[in-house]
Amino acid sequence: MSEFMWVVDVPVATIWTSPQSPRDIDYPGLTNPLHIELWYKILNHNLRLELSDKQLTQSQALLGEEVIIDNFEKEWAHIIAVNQPTRKDPRGYPGWIPIQQITQVEKNEWRTKQQVVVIKPQATLYNKDKQPLMKLSFATTLPFIKDSINLVEVKLPNAIGYLSKDDVTINRENLDIIDLGMQFIGLPYFWGGMSSYGYDCSGFTYSIHKAAGVIIPRDASDQIKQGKRISLKHISQGDLLFFQNKKGNVHHVGLYVGEGRMLHSPHTGKSLEIIKIDKTKYEQELCAVRRYLD
Image 1: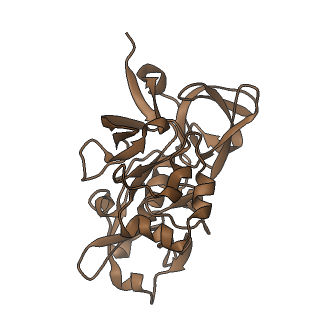
Image 2 (image 1 turned 90 degrees about the vertical axis):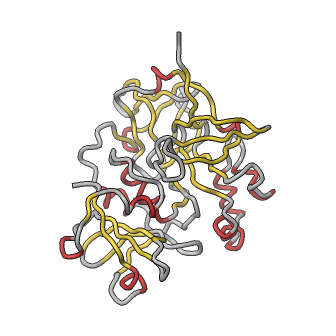
Image 3 (image 1 turned 45 degrees about the horizontal axis):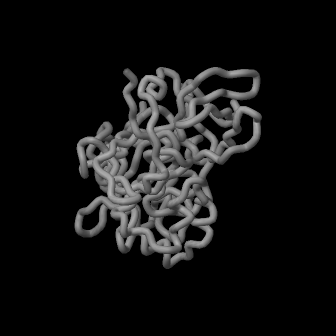
């Protein structure tokens, strides 16, 4: 008898704090098919700030990502994103997703040994007739079926799809997280963002590690509690830098890229950038270094 599991059925599903969190203007981000580019376009600076200031969103999950369903409430499901470790729940990241953005799949078809991972900022997904279906985000991971000269065939929640070999990998051993991260310089910050349409600080560091085959905690305050402790004098490219405010709370994380510089997604209104840490507020706030990849 087949066992089933729940997975995300849109390119990017936003995980909301409650079913009452979305505003009318957020509707394009709640649909299936999804209209995430339209949604981000119509959100001005103040509307984006509200996502964090009013704690409307928690995180995001990508197409095919596994979730546990705790309960349903009308058109919503309370889910746990099992591949996003957090102190909030030992099972994974909790929150609410519209029911229409998730679906069931057979476990034995989904949990395959070989997985295809998107390593470009976006990848076009094609149907069996090689017509474009949708764009997938960086770090989207789908079951591998077979490959041909130019394409890789992947399992989708309710169909079969095809991706260009130039946009994906099956073997993650030779991936460099700095090279992966550099692709996103200039990408606007998005609170709770876990996709290449916009990252928050820890969503960015989480996603580049995920693409390289390493799952780390979702939030900066949890990322600092794991990984290998590194002293400042032994810091190396690819290490994570953590920053705390005057109250001692960890509020930011960036990727060290060498020569006193970090690659990071700063805050709403700014874009992903490389900066020199010296003589900035980050120099004063730097509190720890962690290493997840040797």
